[in-house]
Length: 196
Image 1 (cartoon, rainbow, N blue to C red):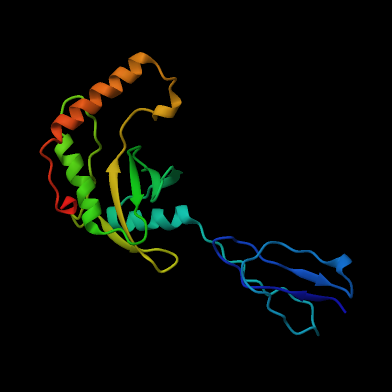
Image 2: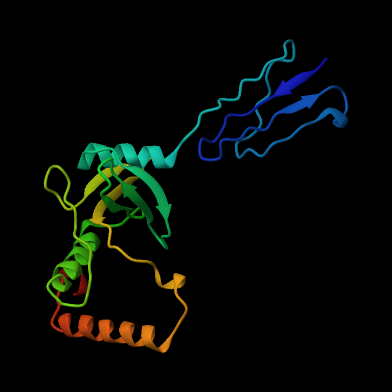
């Protein structure tokens, strides 16, 4: 008799392992699954894997809508420690939604915002505008799909391209050096409690 064994799907992986057994291994199909195999009663042929899907872009778009309003379409951006998303609203406005790593403290976000504030008046140093939540806060605290608390904040999108899209030239190196010097001068007396 043919038996189908299945397992509960990890929504992150959206995959199940289904084994079709007819007395030998020639009739076995396996797909990756991170959950242990659960055996079901052999009297009937059935598939009971929960095909739950999880869409992180939709999840964080809903979170952004709840705390900032609007309805942004998100696409992922590079992030070393945190999740970063390019957000585009119906009116064409663009921003970056920053989902901080688990364990990040509000003080760490405040440090970054304080740096931006200190550099905002400096000519020749473009920095993004921080977009407060609808409640007027600099960030929101959101529980992610794994039940972990995440701090989320948002900045307006700056026009331009990332450095990796340009060939290195002496002129470009000079521009970067000059901008870095302006930043260093502006931050020479910068202080924040997280630096103590």
